[in-house]
Length: 633
Image (cartoon, rainbow, N blue to C red):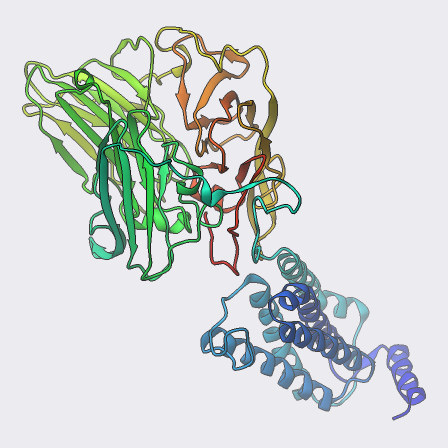
């Protein structure tokens, strides 16, 4: 058929406003095919960098689909409808094979590819187009007069769906997960040191050596990932000044790592996959070594795919006891609040009802760590000690000056935060830690674990929600502090916490952001050793509290909502920024490396609320992304 005949036929059809197959069906098949083509064109750059033949395939596929759509629109025929249905079904079949058994022509032959949002969207468009093409193929050839209004109304669902699906698929395809993102690359011509060389210097410190074997176990009928067969992992107790050596052995089906939350380890030992090391592959091992510096309450957890591995059970407590024996309490307990793997429940040290021994008159130090993801309301935990007056002697492992005795109060703890309570056991009765409850789904009943210290009748139940909240900004006695009292700061950065719908890591989803950008494309905070760094962290949101955690440094809290702290200097590694709150914090850049700063709500960090603090003259040889397999969040 000549071009003249094609144009003549098309004109006749338009003039009569009659189509021997439904115009709505025809146009929807064209829209669906063009949508799939647009997504295939959008994935070309990412596939070209991964494997050139993939890129060439998607270029050819996109061109073929555009050609098919044009031909169907200009010269509709049963033959073209059959070709359209068959080709779309064939592409879908190839996609299914590539995601289940793999294909022979690939970077790694016969290795199944991961399912991604863009390819699912394209496959959905193609699947509906198959249905539309088959309906066109089966329709009788008799002419039917169609009114424009009726045709337009029939087109409304597809006109809404196909462009939206195309927009989502193309947007996701144009923002793929980084294949190999380097947070601080080597720059030729600049004097620099590799992060791998930032290790603890040799010395004669007492050596404390541990082995942590990560492997699957079953807990309460659910699969868990555990260190040394328990959730949480074993408590590690060391003394201030010890040289700590930990051997991680990985018997998991996936790669993993260990981060020493709150301990200012050397740069190479921080355990962040893709920044300070490559994640430890299944069957591999890694040796961490650092000096236990400031005494305090800390914890350890995976920092590879943390959003999944921490709730799976890869957590544990680590306590650095003071070298001065006079500071050691008669009873010293660490209690780690965590999620029961595979269940909508909280536990403390692996149980819902923990009993700790103590006799009347004993002095007890209770080290509370919140290692649990928040509930649906994203609110912090608010543990309450009842049965004895107490002092909050430390936050995030750092002592407070002049702590005062308190009655029952709610102590807000975001995920990752810790509080040390010291009290004297009463002459009779037990002391209890309550208030460990989250907001869950309407059909679930999240547990509220209880910690009981001592024996005898427990104190009367209290209405936790009616109790006052502990206010760290006015607690304790003021004292001089070199960071808080500084007259100026060398580096200042404002970080606005936010988020919304967007495209990231090859998907269309809600993202969480620092100042409008999502990881890994948030500009780092660049510092030089010895500088004082001031951060203003602003949460304009109405609902979520964000526990913002810094690696490798100690934050000095300066002011809340513009009001300077009036009590003890407060030093933490995590600051809880509630709705409509602004916190001013500062730290001294005294630990060279590449350090993460991120929200410790794991979903928020995984959705983009994560960045780095980069020291001048330090680079990392490690990368994050699909090619390296390092996914820290």
